[in-house]
Image (cartoon, rainbow, N blue to C red; front, side, top):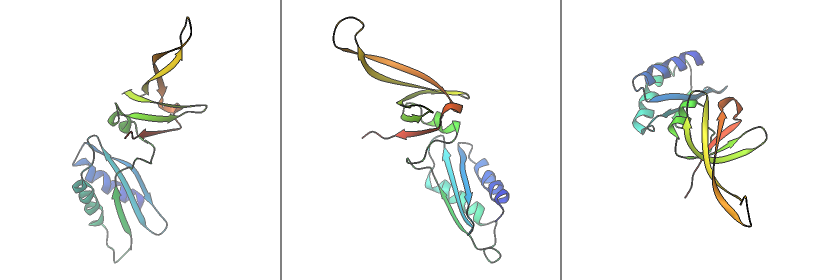
Length: 153
């Protein structure tokens, strides 16, 4: 199975809806094609079906047998693209760096970095007890080892 041809067909299908974008494309040795797409406003099932048909209709199963799966990223997978960070502004992220893990609300994401914010309890500067303070950190994408959206119930 030609990965370049599959990717071109997926990109043609995605061009019809600019809010959608390709997150991942994997073709296994036994010709199982797994396409993961995401969207700025989510991905309706009808779009997954449309993309699947767009790819499927351009290959002949008599010549080469394959299976095809078009899906959206699930919550257990880390964010891969900068566009996914923008989509998840105001959600809680768990971000792994080299030496530490930070959990906070994603308040901003641009082309170079993200900004997380969270509340923490710290000792009072004077006297006994603790006080709640607002913490903010800016993290460059290149420093992020893994970032996942945390679901709070």
